[in-house]
View 1 (cartoon, rainbow, N blue to C red):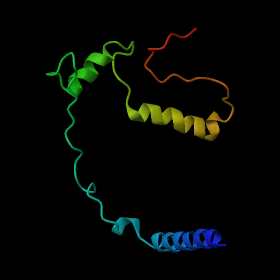
View 2 (view 1 turned 135 degrees about the horizontal axis):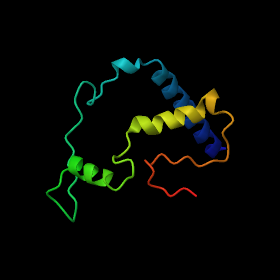
View 3 (view 1 turned 90 degrees about the vertical axis):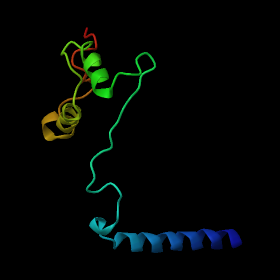
Length: 105
């Protein structure tokens, strides 16, 4: 019986916290990232530690047939197409969003 009482107690406490959290306005919750630029990102490579991330991406783009690395928007547009009504007839297919890097048979 005690075990059931603890489970009920935690369930009620969880519901209370959930009810309190649902009343919060997301715009009023403080965040250290709002209104600040993204931090500078450097990716040192073991083969070439002096190479920056931008230079690494340019060099990586040279190995792709399209000549560049894809943007997040290009991946997102394929996902949006598949989730929309326009992609409702698409099934059982692998869509490569890789700039032609994958061999197609």
